[in-house]
Length: 229
Image (cartoon, rainbow, N blue to C red; front, side):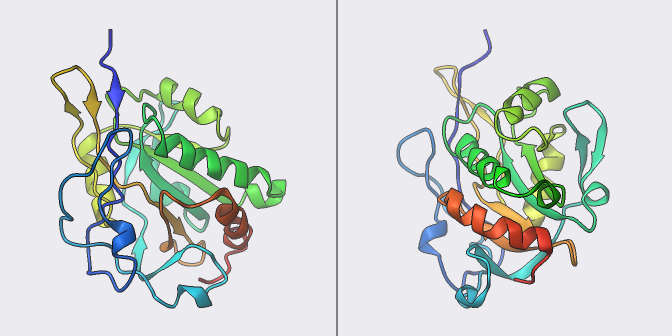
């Protein structure tokens, strides 16, 4: 029998010191009690002027390129993240299917928000989920899980070292899964969604694990139109 899997999700971020929201970005636990660890460098730099943005997301003052990442999609074919999503609005999230709470909640909220868009708007946004637990998240497992939230969502799985390196370029921490003495697996990773604008293929927007469906529903039409943050 495969090990039972639990998850400690961390909205821990690497990179420049925060201008704001430091408290909101500290390490927390998901699917377990308490918190652990300390930031490995400090949260991403966010803007205190985000209230002036038409988006309800946190606006990043430093814009990040899409990771140079090639993994397998749920059909088992190589998927070049930069090439496939070039010039397209993109939401990118790192997580895994055995997560008991934040991952399905986040992806489910995005799915509900996407369902409120017109078909034309939906076609302009790529939602990409990158597994942080590729040993268990096979293409078939990943496709079945994603289909319950959004049948057009893209799932990527493969070399964990590639995933960790790609996440790091965005200031997202991904750690190796740990098998505990009781047989459970703890996999810690950043719990934030990055929003990339189609105009420059850079991340301008940050959605924390506490982001509501209403916020996604407000922002996605703007993202589909490529409205500047």
